[in-house]
Amino acid sequence: MATAMRTDLCGTLRAEHEGTTVTVCGWVDRRREHGEHLAFIDLRDYTGIVQAVVDGNHDMRVEYVARITGTVAARPADTANPDLPTGEIELRDCEVEILSIAEPPPFPMDERTGVDETIRLRHRYVDMRKARMQRNLRTRAKVNSAVRGAMEEQGFVEIETPMLIASTPEGARDFVVPSRQKPGNFYALPQSPQIFKQLCMVGGIDRYYQIARCMRDEDLRADRQFEFMQLDAEASFVTQEDVFEFISHAVREATEAVTGERPGEIPHMTWNDAMERFGSDKPDTRFGMELVNLTDLFAETEFNAFKAERIMGIRLEGGAELSRNKLDDLTDMVKRWGGKGLVWMKVEDDKSLNSPVAKFCSESELTGIVERLEAEPGDICFLVADRLRRTQHLLGLLRVELGRPPVTEGGFNFLWVVDFPLFEEINEDGKPIPLHHPFTMPHPDDVDLLNTAEGEELLEVRSQSYDLVLNGWELGSGSVRIHRSDIQSRIFEMLGIGAEEAQLKFGFLLDAFKYGAPPHAGFAFGLDRLTALLAGEENIREVIAFPKTQSGGDPLTQAPTPVADAHLEELGLRVLPPAE
Ligand code: ASP
Image (cartoon, helix red, strand yellow):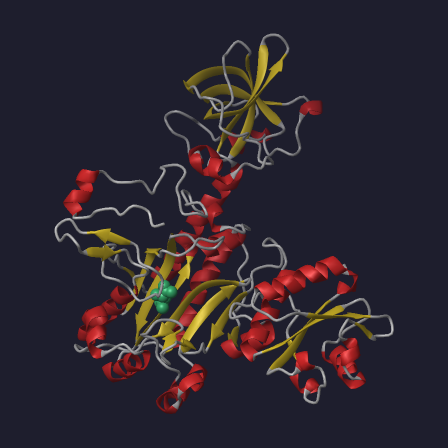
């Protein structure tokens, strides 16, 4: 990394360099006076910090940019700093050149100081100088590079798809861009390259990939930004097993590139098992606390609250010490999630159950709970009785609330969740809503069911779609696509999308399929999410150079901003006063 301006990087100097003359460049991290005429300067670049002993008369302040030439010398033994990689040495007999002066930084540069996020983002260029952002952005680059390499190695061809397009069917709200040449008309920004990658398959590309920017106008969360990056891929003449293989290879390569350790084979779990055992379609398998079905224990119950389609429980080891307040909080939480309530039972020394509802349960019901949940004295059991899906969902959330390890612990548990249902729910008009997107191929074993099922029964039809999950985060989704127009028409019909509407929305894809579509399947996973987890961050904003805040603004550029009236005029747009 030597350049015409420097010979070495600050953080790389060691005792072995003793006696050599070096030139380093960077920012002043700290200044301490040393006697009357000398000062210690810590100079920082992206590799770390080196201490230089300089003439104290220099006006060198924090965050000034400087170039220092000096001789590497061992620090006196009592001043060596074992916590710093360069702590055994310092630069002496220094010549100093100030390259830029700087105002005091907008926040302390000390890593341990918590700074309001808006202020960090407003001055992201300063925030970025800190070790955490330096590490995260470099981790991100490693992930991108490993993923790119893995796809190339497997014969995938990088193809760029357009940003100004017609709407895509991912089911979120589109960001739109007004057309100047056709006032009143709009482009949509891609929610994904979905349709284009399928067109590439019709075009004989065989294996496509792209590190693609996707835009979805959804509420922002810790794992969601308006714009995000995906590894997007599609391949022809493949089954879902092939997709698992090439995507697994890419994420394992990325993980190894960052952590130095290669994850093992990625296990598979059906969507049904995931819901049944973990109450979630993105189970965090770093910890147990699996859901246990207790429904049959209560077949004859006298207790009204337990007369439900499904009763399930989870056990928290050592949870009997939870306070009444904490238990009330958990109950409120479950109600906020849509539940009717939460039953808790503390396991006493004699394995009897201490619970406000114990008196409504029979002896065999109570011993049954202890046995099924393998409860031990000092544990607590939580029970929910509700409709099947809601019981699973509520206990799934509670399990995560009570058991999830911190993001930096428990390793990297990748998981393929397979055999997702084709439909998510039935809408008010009795039409099913696709869980993935309307081009997803039904499961081969469920084609008959698809043709005969009615109403709620349709929710049992499985699809050839699958998700990749890591530590409880959905990394991405994909599916085998419908490549036959007869099946596609049937699905559109079921979804209540008429021939005319289908033609209007996806006509160009349906037309393309008339010209010879190969069977194809694909996948996309979020690079922001993968990087965040590999970097040990809870929030994807920490691995994005210039993210938006939770409310969707950019404190640095102030976006979104109004546009000039003349510009609106040109676009044929008029802005309404804000709605009441
Ligand atoms: N286009 C899908 C998505 O962005 C992924 C896929 O089906 O390939 O979620």
